[in-house]
Amino acid sequence: MQELNEIQKKLLETIAGLRGAPNGAFNIRSDSKAIGRQSSENIEITPKTDVSGLDIRIKPGTKGETVYIPVVITQSGIKELVYNDFFVGEGAEVTIVAGCGIDNCGAVDSQHDGIHRFYVEKNASVKYVERHYGCGSGSGKRLLNPGTEVYLAEDSSMEMEMLQLRGVDDTKRDTIAKLAAGAKLVVRERLMTHGDQRAVSGYDVLMEGAGAHADVVSRSVARERSFQEFDAKITGNAPCYGHTECDAIIMDEGRILAVPGLAANHVDAALMHEAAIGKIAGEQIMKLMTLGLTETEAQEQIINGFLR
Image (cartoon, rainbow, N blue to C red; front, top):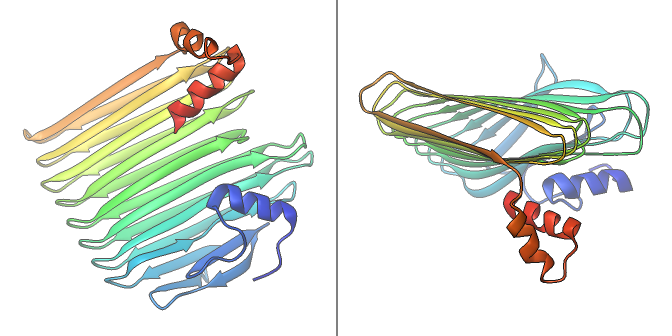
């Protein structure tokens, strides 16, 4: 793998927990090109020939392996669109770590748009972790627009951990999922916005088979003048269970819009939604201040615990 500079090292550690090349399969992308790629015995990574992106093929029965596909941008003015397709074989159990970090110290916007498609075969299980992070002293924005498509075959499952750590000026996250009989999808989204940042998350989950199960939960904090929108729709076309929830803290002049949606097209589709938006309770702050914390420190402690 190409030697990393200090900015690349910092970004990779933040979004993927990496310090250099990991063991096993990985593809590390920096400033619109691959700087390191490796397949394993059970996971093959090949570049696409028609568009920018990768095909990641995981053999049936693969157990306990992790594949890393992080992206970092360290130059101002980069704009890219990448397509990554994951083919997860029957009975496999794997973890996929993705995400993007942008360090923009210039005056021109930097933007990464990534389309990830997951084809998960029967009885396979995937844990997917996607972290977004922005930093840098420039006036150029840090823009991230992830699109995710999930196709779960019979009795397969996928757990998605979607994190926006901080520093992302504008993001639009669109996720669609289709679940066959007995398939299970769990989504845990956590994000914080500040300044004039904008974050829009849309989920469209379609449960087609009997016994399908979906649980989509977002926890977020909107600070200063930032805006967030959470739009989640769950459709049940068979005997199934679906739940969506938005739990948000609003601060300063922040704004939050929660739009939960349910569509039941079968008498045995059990669907529910919850939404709660509010400020930090004064008694919580006072209790922590009696322990010696300042008001600002108390707020940060509450927020960190809420987003954990």
